[in-house]
Length: 151
Image 1 (tube, rainbow, N blue to C red):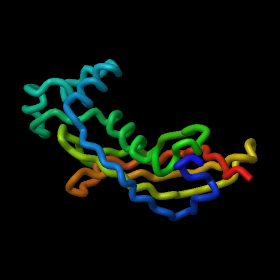
Image 2: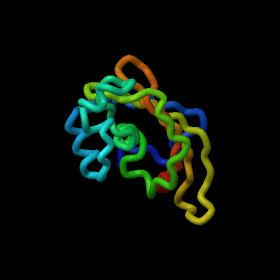
Image 3: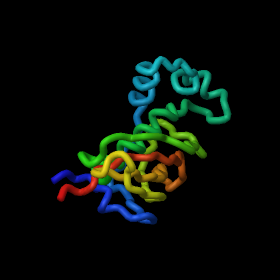
């Protein structure tokens, strides 16, 4: 039995407060930016970033998005999805800084049976990532192709 939820386990309006949190480190930010060929000085140059309105380096937003989705896997999709189909409406209302700890809540927005795969259903999810002070740092929606529970 997989720990993720099957399509049949979800309902529109359901909310999941994910138990895992993760503290973002300087290494996470620098390595991710380097691996993705992103030389943005807001992520990599402390001198430059100290003279911006942030006063320090900010964490790469694409890393933040990946982390937020990753924090949902063990309680939502581990072994029970076929694919992520889309990411939409991504917003970053506040920056993430080195040392921030990120937590995630998921809401099920929509569900429907797959027209082409009778063993699957499509689910639109909303993920909200918050830092250790409960401030929202990212919101996004994604559509996932979930497996239905085997009969």
